[in-house]
Image (cartoon, rainbow, N blue to C red; front, side):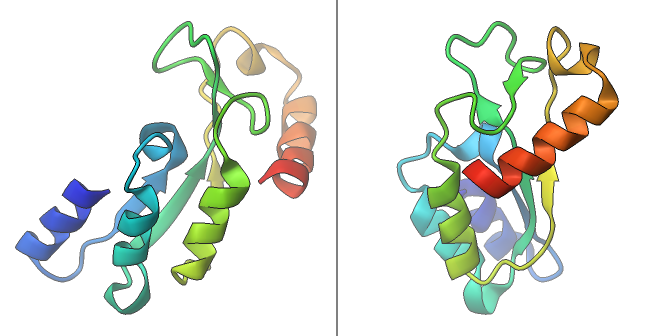
Length: 119
């Protein structure tokens, strides 16, 4: 997040940041980075949700359904909302060996239920 904010500062207006929890949940300065991107700077453009599974079998295609992993999703959502983000919450479950093999109606119903209960 810090690097993304620095790039936005350097390159000027019209740029924004997509906060993808899969890529930033571990950042010890994440709250500060979200605060910096929000508020008056208005850089928070997207919020991508999934969970980090332990163990992870594939760094790209083994993303977990929200609530199945170790990411503190309610905390990150709170930071996003406190920073002024009011946009969509985009679910990105790249899961070749699990969720992609399931019935799409089941996947969608689980996404909705998990967003309500663990995000």
